[in-house]
Image (cartoon, rainbow, N blue to C red; front, side, top):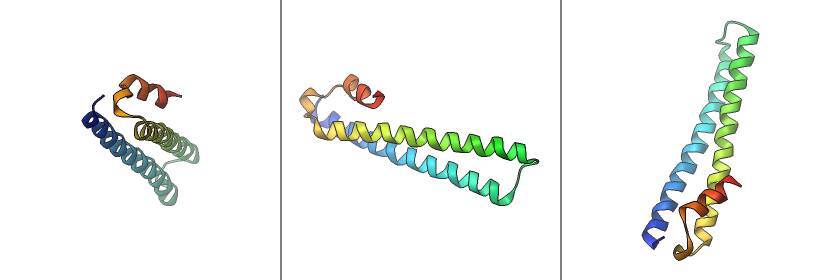
Length: 93
């Protein structure tokens, strides 16, 4: 990977990290708003919606953790030995 590709990858993953963190925050906000407004028809429906929002927020937080690992790996690895496959492997483990 060239230095330019490395910098491009870092920009991409930093943007992705911000997006995942924002998405998790919004999922939590929506869940809290639903609870505060009690905009669901029944307690059971609220539990389902709230649980789904929580699951979505957790999925975004998990992805953010993977992206943080990728960023740390990219920053610590010389461009000459970086590969897309290695970055994916770091994210997956």
